[in-house]
Image (tube, rainbow, N blue to C red):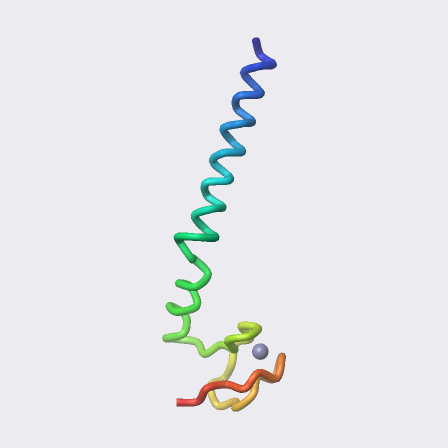
Amino acid sequence: MSGSCRDLRDQMDNESVLDAFSALVSGGRPGYKTIIEKKVEVKKCSECLFILGGNEKFCPECGEKLATN
Ligand SMILES: [Zn+2]
């Protein structure tokens, strides 16, 4: 009994993890939202997310051209 019970729990765990992961990948876009929120206070490279001082024209980390103004 304890064996099958354990199996069921593993299955449920896998499903809930998969659900959460799917929500992250498809619907929620938490990373995207985080970038937008932080863009207000901190300027970041759109390529590597290197935190910028705000006056750089190119990212010192990856060389990405930065949009100024
Ligand atoms: Zn960069």
